[in-house]
Image: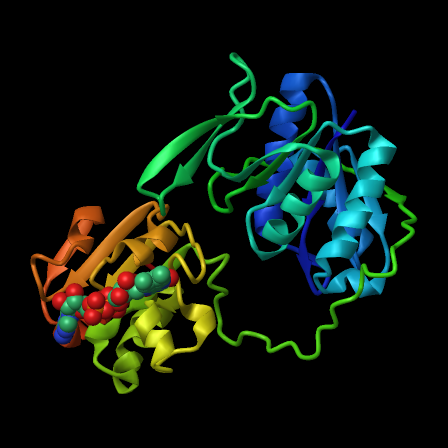
Length: 325
Ligand SMILES: Cc1cc2nc3c(=O)[nH]c(=O)nc-3n(C[C@H](O)[C@H](O)[C@H](O)COP(=O)(O)OP(=O)(O)OC[C@H]3O[C@@H](n4cnc5c(N)ncnc54)[C@H](O)[C@@H]3O)c2cc1C
């Protein structure tokens, strides 16, 4: 009856956000008196998998098929179904990211299960199985009670602070019989995102909007990001105009991030942009218009011209680092 959790990796390295998913599953397991079985798909070293015990997994079911190194949503769902049947699981946890968003609904349909997509809280089991999630692009919250016997939950990354424990998971190989269509979609090309800090996992993000005027000014954003050890992001019109690559675009139609610090420069703060960033722990807005809507969502604001504020901020960060070595 273990809680099943899908664990993700990049080139064999388990993603930090997957530890959150495992910890989330462990919370449910503790409340329901069950255990946690993590499902790892593709090529991952044993030491990486046993370390999942530090976040509450007792067991790893490993499907060592190299085709699963890339996302194949149908194949992932088939592998998870095999694991779910083996463990007789009633609760399945994934991340609410590209992989989880593709896999969780497929599982919910196959299992006739209720699904909460983008969980922001651990389930409250005092009155059912109630989970908080954001709705209307983050403008409101819904508290959803999953009443079905089997429950599927995709967890919003960067929501639950990690706390490691002593523990080692055991590893078991899982054989899966895949269907004809499981690998029906062929990935023809993978363009790896270059950059020192991955946006999805970044704790600090510096982001630019149309107020930056053009790509020739992006050095100012990059200089500050480099000094802070931050990733860079942008608003949608910036990516649409090819000032920045599309993988940096955040918002309703782009990535959803929840860093500890989001610095928004020359971004108006339209609801569609906020949808991707309003889970950030602290928001700093730099905008020359004191009426810019983003100030309403900000913890700190600087009213000023980005071209003047950014170099001074970068200098200040540099000085701070020098005096706090
Ligand atoms: C269906 C739909 C989906 C969308 N999805 C997204 C999405 O995912 N992400 C997204 O970002 N947008 C999205 N949008 C677009 C969104 O509505 C806004 O148009 C967009 O976010 C505005 O981008 P911006 O703030 O960079 O530009 P603008 O709205 O043009 O704002 C520029 C800001 O820069 C300030 N500024 C100008 N010059 C300076 C300066 N020198 N120094 C400091 N500040 C300055 C201005 O005061 C202004 O506030 C979507 C829209 C629709 C309809």
